Image (cartoon, one colour):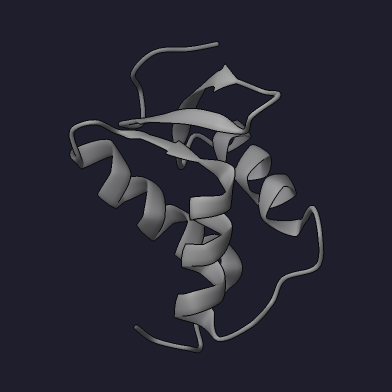
Length: 83
């Protein structure tokens, strides 16, 4: 992985991989670990969540919140589903 990518780029990579997987569900901690491992950085608390919401608003990623309390999500291909 390219350590010079932005956190947003890692979030998009994660979602692209997950949306193609079966199952496409994941826990928020899996996303946080992916970003940290691949970027070599520890983002500030809440940063990944804010970026994830921003990318969704920009229609760059898509997901369903399966269980907000446990941080359980389902990644969707862009243009599919809605909450």
